[in-house]
Image (tube, rainbow, N blue to C red):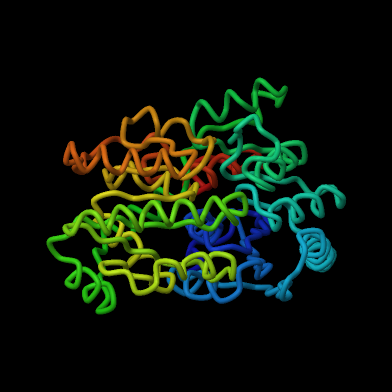
Length: 383
C-alpha cells in the first residue's frame, strides 16, 4: 500500500482507522487503501491487537502499515478489562495525534471503545458496516449491543445495504448521515479471487480431499461456545461417518473453547482439523467447498460471491439479504444442521453463482468519497 503521488489537497484530513480483529483488517483494508490513494487524506492506522496471532498475517497480506500497536490482550481477560484497555490506550493516541475523523468497523470491542474515546474528545466517528440488527440485544453477544452503541456515537453511517440503512433510519438516525456503500469485504474478496493464489498448503489439502464433497466449517462466536458448538460438531461427525464421499474441513479458531470442542473430531476418518488459513487460502477453500457451515458474519457476506451453499449456525442473522438469495439457510440447532445436511446430500446441492447483495467491490472507494464530500473536498480531488 503506497501513499498517493499527487500533491495533498490543501490541509490533508487526518483519518484514524481503528481495528483489532481479523475480520476488521479484511474489511478495513480496502478503506485504508482508498484513503492512502486519495490526496485529500492521511490515514493513521491503529491496531488494538484484540486478535493477536491471527492478526499479523492479515495485516501483512493486505499491505497495511500500522502506526500504533496497542497490544491490549491478556490471557483470560474479561470483556470489561479489554474494553477499558482499548479505551485508555486509544485515547492516548487521540490525545497525541488529534485526528479529524475516527473510522471504525462493525461491532467489536475495539470498534466500540475506539468510537467512545473519539466521541469523548469530540472527534467525529465514521462507522463502516453500520445498521446491522437482529433485534435481540444479547444475540449475538456482545456484538449486537456493540453495534447499537456505535450507532449512537457515530456521525456518518456507511451501510452495506438499503435494509441496513432502513434500520438506522427507523431508529432516528438523520438521513443525510446514512450512506449505502456496500461492504468492503466484497472488495477484499474480489481482490483475492482475481489473484487466484493457492499455497502449497492449500493445494495439498485440496488434493487430499479430491473427489469428496467438502464441508468447510467455521465456528467461533461466543454464543456458540459450550453445548451448542459440541452438538453441531457431533452432527457433523455423524454426517461424515454415514457418507464416505464427504469430508469435513475445520480451520480452527485459536480460542481454547473452540479447540477443546474440536477434540471430539480428532482421529475421525475424512475430518481435517487445521490451523486458521491465510485469507487467499481460506477463500480458495470456501470456493472449492460443497457446503459451508459457519456462524461467521463475514462468511455470510462472502458466500454469495462464491456461489457456495451456506448453513448458518445461528439462531438469527443480521444479514437477511443472504437468505433472500436462496443460497443460505439458518440452522439454529444441531438437529436443524443435521436435517439440512441430509437434505442437501439427497438433492445433490451444487454451487450456483448469484449477485452479491452486499456490494459490487467498490465500497472502499465509495466510503472515502463520501467522507471527502462531508469534509467539503471537491469530488475530482477526493479519490
